[in-house]
Image (cartoon, rainbow, N blue to C red; front, top):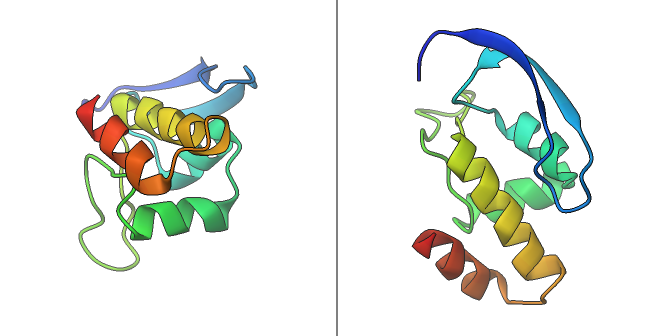
Length: 101
């Protein structure tokens, strides 16, 4: 996780919505970034994260601190979402599959 900052456009969700992310470390994304990239409701994302179905490379050290997601974590969240919403896998099954990836 270098200190380089940049503007970049990510197009990694299944419906190809673009989300412009401004001035972030190129290898880390906040939960808000992930929610916007994959068009996930904040409450649903919070539930998935708090139950351990999705994981961040750098967990929040204490309450009020941000968890940071790597680019691979962002891809894994997208896969998890597709497994659950499109293919109707249980959250447990989808989590196991994305852990293997």
